[in-house]
Length: 593
Image (tube, rainbow, N blue to C red; front, side, top):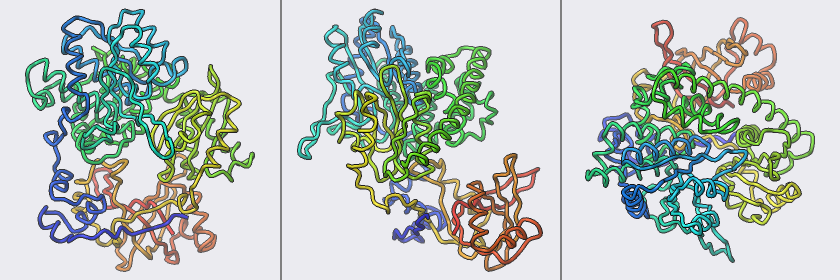
């Protein structure tokens, strides 16, 4: 059962509304996002690229740029080593374009998920060395590659790290000793002594900041000029794409990057990105975080899961529409295949959990030896959603067992794994997601260690529904829905606002969709004003709830001839429905009780 709670944060909402020419409802929603100071409210409502933080504020940025410019001048070979997910692909593309624009001798290498695993390893270092690489530049990885970077140093190579992941540490009696890799420069906002104002940026944003400063120094301009150039604006699109794809919180600087990036994507300068929109039938003018997170982004991830992410990089580097469309079509086909394999894996995981007594565990560790290792993270995410518990999915790999974890808010995955780090051959991640490798004989030890150390309470597992404003649907208007668009883009850290209405009467209902999984209802509040209300959640569970509460006959009547005998409380957000040139208000039900 979800725990509904009204946000009770205080402020003079009328004064805020008057000052910023918004309604008190919008003022209340903004306050609920912990945006309090005048400058922050103004930036939230009207922030632009002029409000982005200076690259100079990142620790070691000047050192990294200075070293790269020296290597470019000396015509040394530079190799960018990225990662096989959305953030790694976008980071690699950003750095490659920036270095090419400076005249660098540069190539790229993206680890193969199956053969190389995540991040730097000795094999990648050896390959770079054999290819005559002088300097390795990492992106979206490197912060945890202490021994690998030491090895590169021993071969006489220069390594520069750009990353955004947590810095590894040793915990002795509650005191953390952080282990920074021995690179000539480490640009990662998560470093303890980095004073960057907003450390929750993705790897592609770190890469974007480096390119802005690199080009500024190379061309003897300021970084703001570079940011507004054609190249700067194209690369901002990829920083935004990665921010959404890596599920970063859409707060502060991330919000501005995504807001501006989405606007630019509507007329994207990149042939490959345009081709990907075409083959997935996405209308560029309607692109939103959802589009990237659930349609375009998974096509990039799929190639890194089932083949090589170099295909996705090639798409963005495409020089003509014909080759771009062919590459985009391959990525889409691979993602369609990935969806089928994922569904089978989820079904297998649910079967195992419910038959093997794993439901009693507070942290789920599911070992699926036959599942493709690249799908472990997606399956872990689906299982976490189903059971509301931190979940690890493990599978057989070439050298033992590999896995991925997805967490809940109350469980810091990286910290909890560190408590049993002796079980792993390799691990890394952050609060809500992690990856690991371990010997097969340690699988059960890992499950027991996590659960023995776990301090999660029943309250931690309760789904918490935060209501922005208790507001009857009668107060909703076209103007209010339009005003709520000022809060966009919505996503992690900036969810759609949620309103609550008690005693909503369900008057009639229809079941829609090819899979009969969408509910459409005519509803009314106290004033008897009628609205359409849609429900896209678990319709089977909703109908079971109605039958238990009001009886089968009433529910049958609801769908066949209509009734006025069903009243429920709902959490909803308002929307505008456009159909055949007509527009009408509709409510989207998120929760009910």
